[in-house]
Length: 324
Image 1 (cartoon, rainbow, N blue to C red):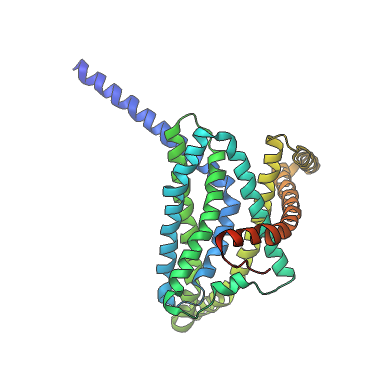
Image 2: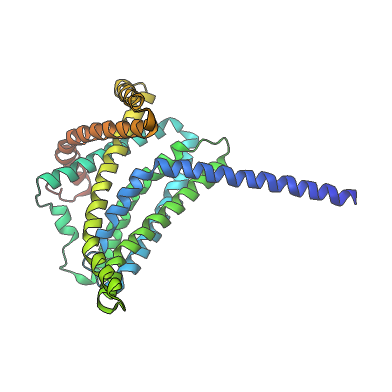
């Protein structure tokens, strides 16, 4: 009997450890997911364009294929690669984050440039070239997965930097949970957004009540506005997140602490001026100033990327650089 009781005690102890580990994974995953939220918003805003122009019956299969490619990017390629980097060269994580943050600033600033001064982009035109319809879906899916890899790399790197755990397996599990949940959330939301206009058309045409038909018409008219809003939010998130990453990296590496310290001082001063909403005001001021920094950095990087890095990359790969 005493042996059975001892065994039950051991089982209970193991269960407590397992439960604590699950709690730790959940907490780490939640923290990491919050840190990566800005890039997630942009990912959700970017993806719907890849099903533009396809018949309704191909939209969900295309999103499913992109989602599977995204999971492969995160769990098979990036997860082991980042964990190995964190183990053998942890000093490289912050510079990689800063590089990714600079890329987000560049992308955000380029989107602003296109919004305020629209012009043709050979790369975009090539993406939408329908000269070979039989391969169009394959090309769109491949292009979406490549774009997802860049965003996924940033999401997973941000998540890795946010996870603080002495246990390798807890860190790996938390990172896997973050990658999986974010993929499900992003592509589930994308599928819902993409099919919502079809739902609206169905309700508008076959709704049994006038209210249902009105709701359908509202969905049809409202979805383009929602997509435009998501695109705007995604651009703002890129600039805010990218600016924040670079500013924090400059402070952590002791290269240039002034931007971080100045923004922190201004945000604190603004928060103290509004006692009823200190936390929100501090976040809003910090995000706004980070975004302004991101715009400035991105504008500086546009000519560097298009006139220096682009031609060099084209020379190495043998591909023609896209005009901007």
